[in-house]
Length: 148
Image 1: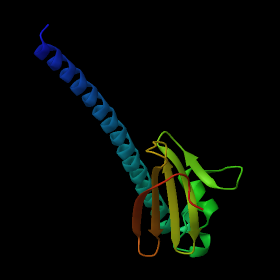
Image 2: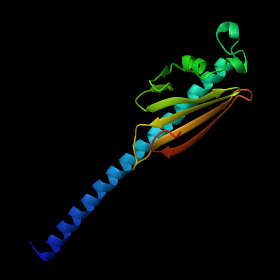
Image 3: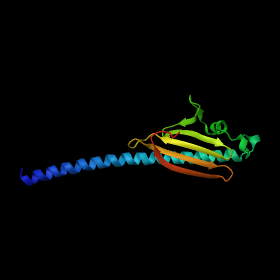
Image 4: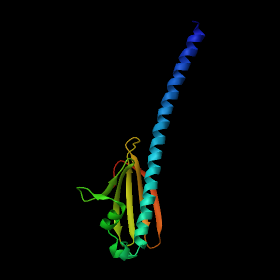
């Protein structure tokens, strides 16, 4: 083989290697972003269930728009969460772990930590449900673990 042919073969091998590395990096980023979106969607769904509970009359098993009835335990039962050994109301699935951060007066806060990992962080989503106004606000970020 001539010198040009060897140079072209070496260049092709380098380009294929770079393409493989870039492809793997893109796949990892895509999985992370998909996990983040899934967590956000599920928390939005949980938020809508909490609002349904809030508006349902007490005699039908809801809160009847009574803030004293809205507790972590009540919200946990309508969402299907369980209490872990630390006393935290939580649920786990293929996307991550969901927790009830707060359920008092007219505000319910739900949080989720995803299973995908990017460097040392996981997708972290916090959803705040304002019961009296019926609004659901979601903030998406990254965190290594659940913040205290």
